[in-house]
Image (cartoon, rainbow, N blue to C red; front, side, top):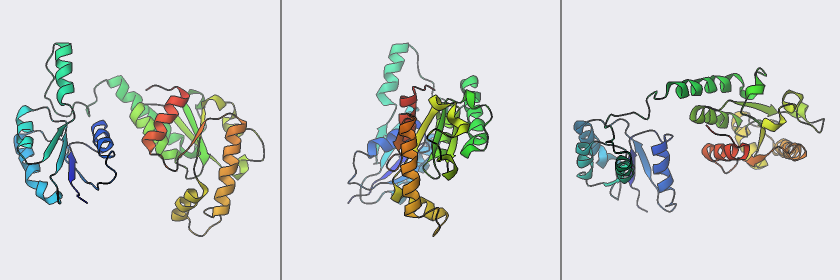
Length: 267
């Protein structure tokens, strides 16, 4: 099976990295080795990337995903022998025509502070997420955009942090433990904020595997305990009309999208 290298000028978590990976995901039968080259801002930098291509390409031509705006740098990449996929390309030209203005070639504008208020809102959201991770703080839950509830190791923390960092949402998360199940209602801590709650679940086997990596050969990681906790959590969600999703086969991006849509949240 051919194993071309793919290179894109930002981290895989950035919008352009996500787009590159989304395109590659349409070819599940092909294995890709990914190599990220950030901030290529000169012809010399492009030449250095081109010189490294043989190190990353295997039996097929390398695929280069790029958001470079400089015509000179693009020309260098197009002369590399690789398959160049310009993720801005025609869309940028369409915007220039529509707006009657030329796009700036300044590098890294997406990664800059940009809208200062939006930037600080995201930083506040991250601080809020850290303070309210795993039920550490119950302060100011009334201003939360969403409160994620789930048994331990179902994906609460990464989803919380993604929603905060990417969308500036105020997200708290609360772990469901054995102490929370004697009653039919939500835990007292979050019960009055039921309309803000969103639940996560997973499969008992997957939960057992994840917990085993943390605490092997314990009751906590046993399949019986995981099965009990998942069943209790899902029953709790249904009784209290808390929307929930199974995290076992979903990425943090997918889970975040579902949560935002279900809770009608906007960044």
